[in-house]
Length: 374
Image 1 (cartoon, rainbow, N blue to C red):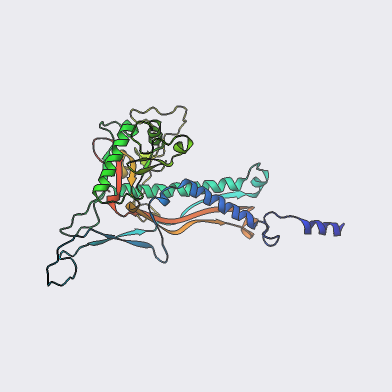
Image 2: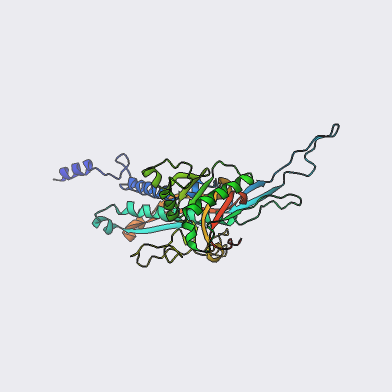
């Protein structure tokens, strides 16, 4: 009997072992890692739309901003030692890494045994979602801040373009933010402003509230969209399929939108919201100024960001994000797991965002006056 038990133990298949040796749960941890990364990548769009740099051996990263220069005629016999006006002027923009951003959960072993679904996989996705949500919100607030700023070039005699704010509609109603005609007109105004400021047409994008996006595609055959012949599911998925004036459009719940994050719930003037939404009235923007613990850049207070911002149009150079620690996974094991009869599942990220070139950022707003700079 002892020999039989020994044989069964030897032949036992441990699905979590790597090559049938070592930690019996090693591969399970990799599954969690993969699910977390998938959740993060599927829910962040800002990471690919602005400038991203990796921060190593330092707390901040310097970006150099170079202003414009001029041409001039050469006088025969004169030495060429650079333009007489000292152009181009140069300024710097420094982005500091915020404190460590984490999302975690404790998984009790007995709950895993009793659960009829993959508990770790579900939790890991939600951790990825939480990190991606914060990542995008900070990045988009940095773009909005840039759209309200003057150029970082302040040298006397040099005039450089700053950010742009474009009004949607002509009334003071919040419902103008959902006007298909108003949005199309605002996009063309924004494109013209970017052209006039010499901003590259490569990498121009717009990010709207989901309701704005769907309002546009409902009128896709008549509202001036460049690729209005695109139809079907590819048009409706919200992944930058439609364009206006060469600006690829995305939808996100993480842009500053009428004082909240990407939702019209809660009594937007002139807009009928769905019924039976319970207590959900949208998530009010938090205070993300530099005065808050863990934040080393200035993303503004809720009042500074304002209640009239309703969309962003920008080019890749408008803002930057530095990552000291990219999305990572940590899971307890060994003695800790034995003592607590479970594992802590942790996703972490260390990053910071800020505007770089205000001329490449455009903020859409409704109402009589544009939101103030902060």
